[in-house]
Length: 80
Image (cartoon, rainbow, N blue to C red; front, side, top):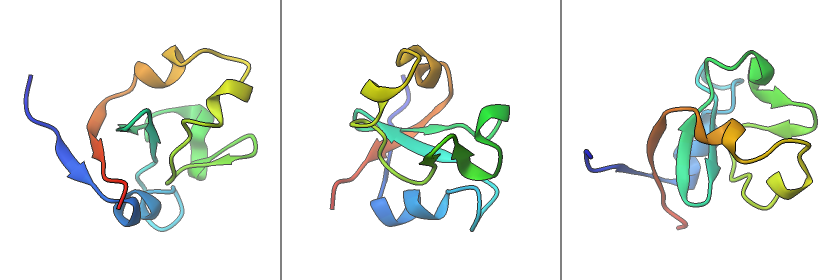
């Protein structure tokens, strides 16, 4: 497995589907690319915005974590 790059909170925040075309979210310390998901068009999925760590919010979702885990992992989230 290739070494994952470190992704800062600031870099993640810019990939919100608004400032850049990329749609990234963090979950359990990893950053996922959801850009190809039709459910995350323009970085919004129901009341959740891309560009942030959604680990705490997934417990309220009507789906399992498998919906995020099926997308490509881009790197590890730096919590600084």
